[in-house]
Image (cartoon, rainbow over all chains, first blue to last red; front, side, top):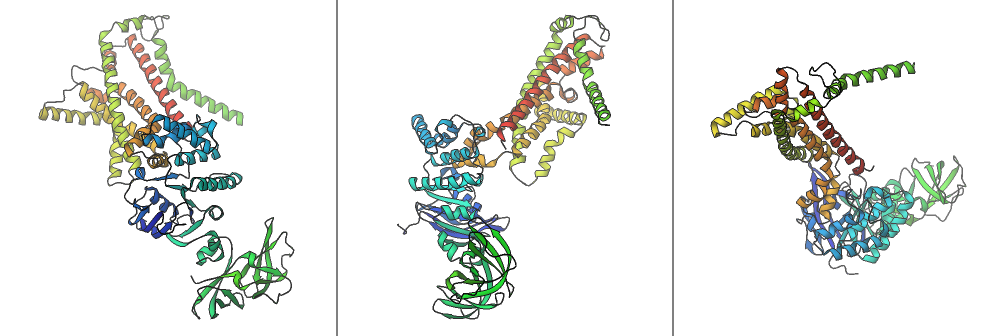
Length: 360
Length: 270
């Protein structure tokens, strides 16, 4: 992996709409061949950032470099970038073949080459027999494939995908996720994808940038985001967790003792960068790290007693809401069907490395 | 109760349609009347159709009207499409409300007022620049002015539900703005533009008031010819002229609504 020159570099990009910064000083590097996801809720600025990469929006300040070349002032039609739109944006008055050929015709390629590349692209997305159809004669999944073929047939250096799977139903979405990943590995094209669906981002992306109100909350691999979130926002946004507030009491090595009034205990957590003693911190505990039992386990680093208030059976596992005696609501999970009833008194335990220590 | 109510609704519907269309149907029927008297049925005949075919003044007027309608519909379509684009696409530019009002004004302005003001304009222009000569050019200019408003309305409403991401996709695939307009935007709004043209054509063809103000002494359009011949007394030939005009207008309107209907049907699949 060469990391010396990033393939896509975003430098301090700011974009304001009527004095509200949709993208507020984002700097980001993406390596060649990566499948990178911009993840965030609505209004987080992820789509604006993608549109800046495509050239539809101009940043108020900052630069965008693709393969070492500054494209900040390059219009969309001259960028080595293609985009797959959320609505697919297939041209309704053209057949599937003409939709795919459109981008090649703009390059002024000879007819024979256009025809053969269109056929290849149709074969790649397994739509070889539907070339003569109009978009409104296709199913949602087929339209998605046409949009993908139309963007890839130009052999872009960078493919942008705006919520690529949001219009598909759940089953088809899961299958298409793996097809897209396979295609990306085969072609070696760098993908930058925008999504609000954290599962989609976790499944597909090699790295994820979590965006919040125009800024990057964290940029990391899915495992890092989930295991060691950088902030309460990320811990809350990715997966599910209980976040409790406390004050750092003492540190020794990577172990941190936190006094948590709403848990009623001094909890132990681990952190590579222990905070100063006395400052407010938060502990985020994932439900699957919480072991529930009627008896208190002597070996667990952290243990609190409480009452089960809600039970959600999810098939493979069960999530339980435990109201701790000191006031906090803790999420715990157990495998399979619930073996504890509502109203039962339980002990909830988690190990020292089962909670992420957050300082913001 | 429901039966009585639906019978009342049917009667109201029948009365409404009768009120609108019985006069037109009777004109069409009476164009095949053999009698010299307009109001007395004297048996079926094509006598007045043949007579009209020999009436050169009427035919000249009809040809002039057609020429005016063709040219002014083209002018109105170009200007109206541009105005529709400005209104639908350029957001809240400075003076947008004023511009929208100015575009729509000819639709609500009494035609007599428009006629007087245009006559004053053309007289003034003639005094200053020696032209344009009152007749064909001035009638075309007047018709373009008010028909463009209708074209702008049709095009604007079509553009309002136009998916902008189609144009962005074309740009993303390497098309410059002019190419995007030629290959994506124009083909997709073509139904609205064509139906705007047809509307402008029909409006121009049967305009009388405005035309009378701006027409020169030499030029007589079809509505003017019909109007002046009626003042001499009712002539059965007028029924024939009316039948032809009604036929043309019906064809244009049906075409126009077919085009807009088809447009929204196939381009908005959801």
